[in-house]
Length: 237
Image 1 (cartoon, one colour):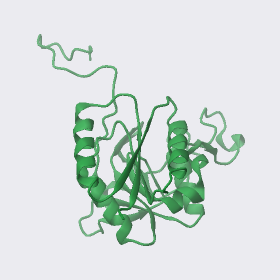
Image 2 (cartoon, helix red, strand yellow):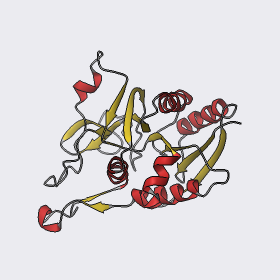
Image 3 (tube, helix red, strand yellow):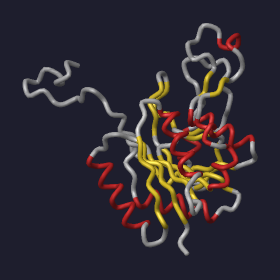
Image 4 (cartoon, helix red, strand yellow):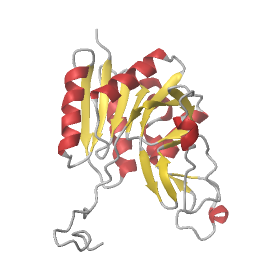
């Protein structure tokens, strides 16, 4: 009997690059896993993640693993196979993630995961990413333990998802409003850190595989196309 893999596929539109990776992923996984695709879109990422988690937990027969793939992180068969192999090879792992770079004001090439929950007092940056040089050190292990991760592409055991529940993807407040002063964030951490914190509090261990580097498309309303007249780019910059 093949293990059952549920895949969260949020999004309303997908790039050609994303779809190519998606098709390859399904073709390579289908011979080895019973696949259930959970589609759906919501303007609020926390809501769609919680909804997909709830759907995964209701599957009959139950899923063994739950995979997340975001619509701006093109998937690949290699990434999926590697993360599943990591998870099954490490009995203590509750979740294994791929990684990518994020755009956070004031930080260049910010990693999508971190080893710290020190968020109180940080108003402009709500999370402290891992150190890039440490992560790229060739003598370091491929699979490294972390405290939180983004969900561009992750694989977790059903036991983890059941233990924290779908509500773990919803925003939670760190500290009180007094700790955050006039910040509009008011100390709230969202789906990625909130879920990771809930998992860690229940004794689950989270890992990232540095071999699984994902693209982060970050769709924009305008793109910087060369201007044929030589006057900068077509969006006026």
